[in-house]
Amino acid sequence: MRDSKRVVVTGIGIISSIGIGREAFWRAAVSGTSGISKVSSFNTSEFKHHYGGEIKNFDPIEFIDKRRLRFLSRTSQFAIAASRLAIEDAKLNLKQLPNYKTGVIMGTTMGESTLEEAVKIWVNEGIRKVSKVLILQSILTELSSNIGINFRCFGPNLLIPTACAAGNYAIGYGFDLIKNGELDMVFAGGADAFSKLAFSGFQRLYAMAPEKCQPFDKNRKGIIVGEGSGVLLLENLGKAFKRKANIYAEIVGYGLSCDAYHITAPKAEGIIKAMKKAVKNADINIEEVDYICAHGTGTVQNDKTESLAIKTLFNERYKKIPVSSLKSMLGHTMGASSAIEAAACCLAAKYDLIPPTINFETPDPDCDIDCVPNIARKKVVNTVLNNGFAFGGNNCCLVLKKYN
Image (tube, rainbow, N blue to C red; front, side, top):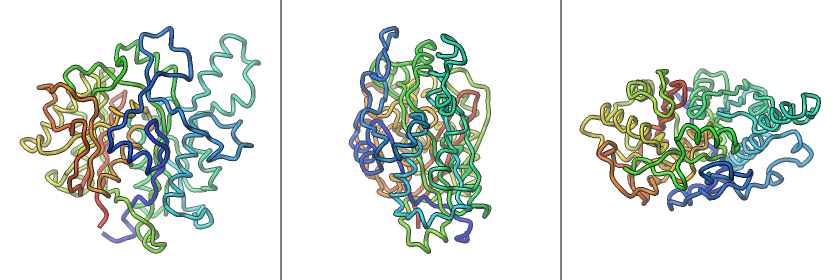
């Protein structure tokens, strides 16, 4: 494949409950560090459960001009900070940014976090009590456009609200834009700040665990809601090679499917279809997949269904393929989840090291995959499949390869 058609990851920006920045995040991930703690951003006394993957040590002043902060919700702050970290990680001078050939594609579930506050004021006090600043902070599409404005990116700017798979969707679309020659660079990823609406919603669905997330464990009790942002700087290989950029991995394809969704678990047929399409579009054989970064939410049905899909597609190989879930450490970061997980896939391929599924205690016969329990594993990782599934059956699987 010609360099002009190849898409590589040259920068990684992470804002998460286990670490801010690529190095801190990866060190915590491979150490099996939990980012779950008691929620402090709002009063949880009215709820049954009180834990989440909340980021406690984020200071936006480190990343954003304080004069602009009043116009940015916490979600946009995360997204801009992750993008800045990706730029720094790529050792890219902003003057080198090809402004009109750089796009921003971001995914989300809840959108701007201030929307909940705006609606509450509107309902309780009337629309005239909602400030202009709060209105500006709450516009859904501001999440992606704020990155474009902040870094003067004048290429296509798009927000993809496909919930828990949105990060993979964003990376996939960014891959297309570079591969077809429309752009040279793309900020692609996802962001969601901690949401009281999501926190209460999953409790009402009886899909939330009390204190810890235990993907693939027999006694798993549900998800833990989290927050954060993951942004990958995607780049045309030829341009990246010319500026002697460090390359983490290559994006080689993705696959989509849309099937009926039963609240907390997609259908196995939909997962299989998305994984098959991703492998086909990446022009690889299914035998080449060395590691699967699972959607792995920790709900009974989701993990059972994802395991069944993997077993069905990979046949007798399924027990030989490591399958781990970062949500065991981060909680479910909504629209940021598959983007943060894509970053972990890049690093797994770069360093031949697979992060574990923590909190694993009791094997489940319905989930008899190799979930890399509790301890990271050294393994040659040439090809990775990153799974992302969402409400409405919006499934997106991404294939990444070690850069050679």
